Length: 303
Ligand code: PAF
Image: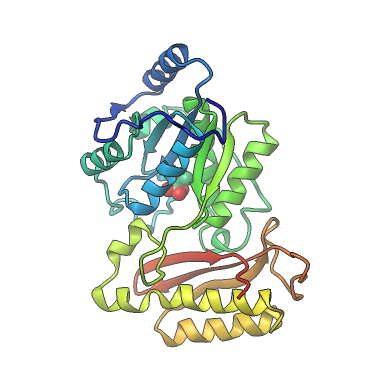
């Protein structure tokens, strides 16, 4: 089956996926599948678990391009700083495996930290310019850790596609750059952000929000949407639209880490109005709501 083909094969939902803990085990399973299904393609969905509907939409996107899907579940220590929530990050493997089964995932790859970072591991991977600024300013260790683990996962899985959410827009751009620069054969696919009915982007960290914080959290998406509309319609200068959005989320009780309109490819902050002839931009933000950091972004909205 080739990329983009409509997959006629019934996806076996509610089958329990094979849970594999070692790189060698995953390689063997993938090789056996390829031998038995010549021409069929495989997609990888890298996650840190605590799966929600946003992750499962990535699985659906993976099924749209490939005949078999691997979900990796690994809370990657190298992308957390010492003061961050690595220890508290939700770990729900049993529930995650069950959720994967309901969406026809064939393999769950759940390695240990020692499997991913064997003793003596020291190779670093950097994508310096794209990883600078935005999340890279307040989390300088983050993209190095992401690039390192994603390259390992791509190499271990040997999949034809890997699917990442647009919610982590800077991460997606870093991974696209990495795969292109290193001539990685796995094609990187971006999938749209899945939102709650009130607009809040789905995230494993939303479970940290108190009921009061959860009520105000969608204000972030509304503010970004407003900036996007203003820029897409040429109604405001980027600085003016962004300033109003910052005031809006601050009044809602959020502390802004960053909020910018950026070029969609380079992530450089826009100083001029985007071209009405299709200048592509993204309005991106990270805010603190109490002790929870929320990130979100939207592309041009023409209404
Ligand atoms: O987006 C995530 O969940 C993680 O950053 C990723 C890509 C799985 C790497 O650990």
